[in-house]
Length: 369
Ligand SMILES: Nc1ncnc2c1ncn2[C@@H]1O[C@H](COP(=O)(O)OP(=O)(O)OP(=O)(O)O)[C@@H](O)[C@H]1O
Ligand SMILES: [Mg+2]
Image (cartoon, rainbow, N blue to C red; front, side, top):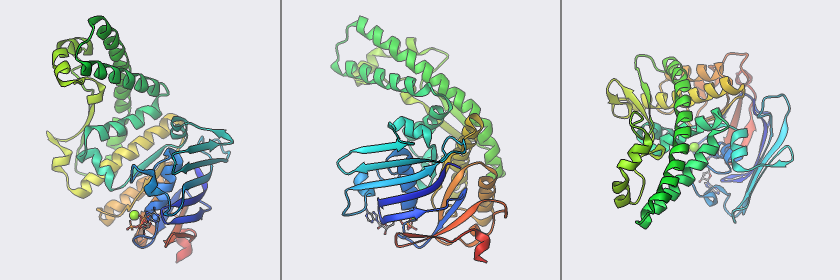
């Protein structure tokens, strides 16, 4: 399990909080506004130096403070050795991440601590924009293949360059050919890794979904962003005049998308709210299962308000899946109720009570009775 102990300083209403010892399944319960989601944000900050709630760091820092810090004893590589991992960020923008005494860049940190969030925003996987779905997809491709990040960066650079040439209006055909060749090279490499990832993920997704939601078949499809039977290079050539008029490149991996289909309909138009939550959760959980299969390492799941939208039976099935997985989970809820009673006795579960920015370790669920 990746995180053994956590210390949080100056994140929202959490002034100085210790979570220790951590378990594989950690249930945080407390009233509205007590600080449950803030703890999840702190863990997200530890892996990605930002919150999942607000793009602006100043909202995350405790009011009146000028920096946030999260420190952990962590075994992210699953080799049985706990080492210090810390992230500190100042309001002026200075970010420092260190693991085992060495500084880390953002990509190294994200690689070290794979985090998956399941909250009300996760519905964006079905209801949101293709850009959001590409982020879900690229999370997986990034963790599945170490070369993905290089192709992704190369492609971003080539796309930016091509678009700025298109905006200029007048392009020397020789220069265009050079940039198009670069664009196509990165686009094809990046897309084949995306495609390979989805091919590996699909059976995992179907297996998790059948455990969480019976009677609904959802097909997961990948759309690469252009018609691959025609080839990207001739399509760029054929669409050049249109791209020039628009001032941007209309085909390529920047238009890739994931589609979730129930029969011929989009899942977003067909499913109930609870069913949608189970589908998006199944996708996220499948990503963690595949990550574990490929790397033998566990993901950290931040599951905000797990019971919301779900009836007790589906909630139990969700927890049974978490129990059987290798993930380390941080689950929030207002009232632990049956959530504290449904785990097998041998599962490593801890309850934390959250009250006005303070946390109390309440032991294992059995200790409460
Ligand atoms: N920058 C900040 N500084 C101090 N307090 C903040 C800051 N931002 C938010 N808060 C407060 O922190 C508290 C905890 O918020 P949080 O969202 O973690 O609560 P929660 O326990 O998840 O509640 P809910 O059950 O309603 O989701 C809230 O009272 C909120 O107003
Ligand atoms: Mg909350």
